[in-house]
Image (cartoon, rainbow, N blue to C red; front, side, top):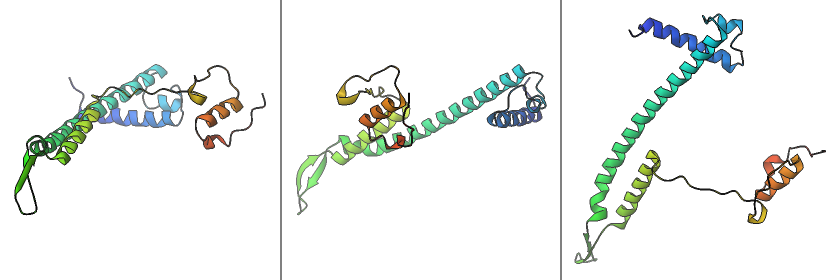
Length: 171
């Protein structure tokens, strides 16, 4: 039998307080958490996991609805641009005479952009492969390094300005 609205509200309130305390760094066996009605540290931990899973499920459902709405919008735009991109239309000179028939290349570009947007939205494209290389395109040295060596390597890869505040390595 599903929980009543009052019970669901009570659980949501307890979980909100639990999450707030945990964000403050309060341990599961702290009296403030146990005072929320949990019988043990394990019960509080399990309830936090349930709350996070429930929230993740809610977010996944919202994302699914968003994707569907975006797909419908893309469908409408594609439908509007498709005839201009796929069917030749007359091209007129200054006097109004038909000089040729061509497809609208701007519409083709629009179609390609819409298709690219859909592929990104649905994750259809293969992931972009990136490769990290060391100085002069060589291998990245891996192993124990000092802070000074790490700073030098980062500086060689980029400008390294964000690390200017690091103390010099004395070891």
